Image (cartoon, helix red, strand yellow):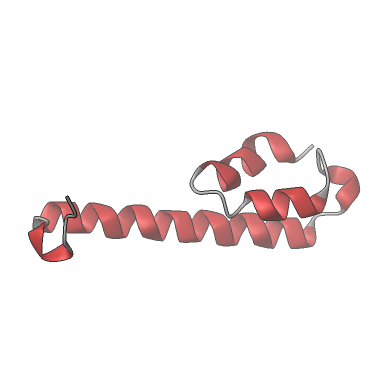
Length: 69
């Protein structure tokens, strides 16, 4: 069964937009930080962290919590 946007309540629509916007902001912040951070200050290869940032929502959170030294 597929739920359509029109089937959602206003509150549910707002929640979906808020979660989506939060993921975009976290991903953008993580990628920006990765671009500016030298590889020596990261735990693991930079390329792996870049790829990991696209695994939502855990990738950007993992980078900020574990990836930086």
